[in-house]
Image 1 (cartoon, rainbow, N blue to C red):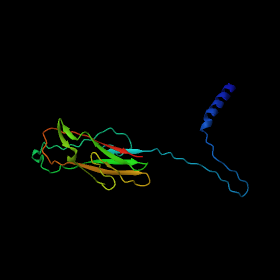
Image 2: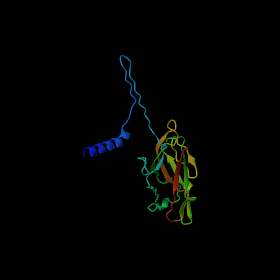
Image 3: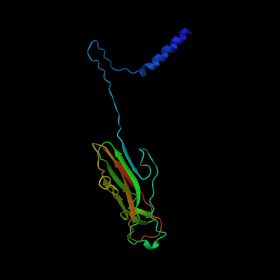
Length: 185
């Protein structure tokens, strides 16, 4: 029984040994000072985050794709009037820690489609609440948010979108999608 307890204790100590930390030590006798050093290390990964719409508060994947709808069913007399629709805003955020970020906007096809009918992307107007530091890229173009400091960019804004409504389009529901892609060195 004593031999079994001894073996169990020895095994437990052998397993725990790697968990013990050893620090530098210095013993001094008399009036001399004693010094011991401790190293610190912080590991930061390369991070690139872009959120357009829902889910920009937390650095996490979010598969929700927001949809902005401009419905003229209730005010058909305004179709093609040249009066812009009311702007709709989406919250946006970009965060990166390895240098200048570029954000590209790629639209599905040449515009919003309804069968063979098209409303060109140029009919969707875009603006930013922080155009100086974090502007909206036009479809087919890029923008570069201003770096906060060093290699770090952390910008938020609201991007507002409106339908320009400059031409009468054939009836139907027109749909399209813009994919915003952030890249960083």
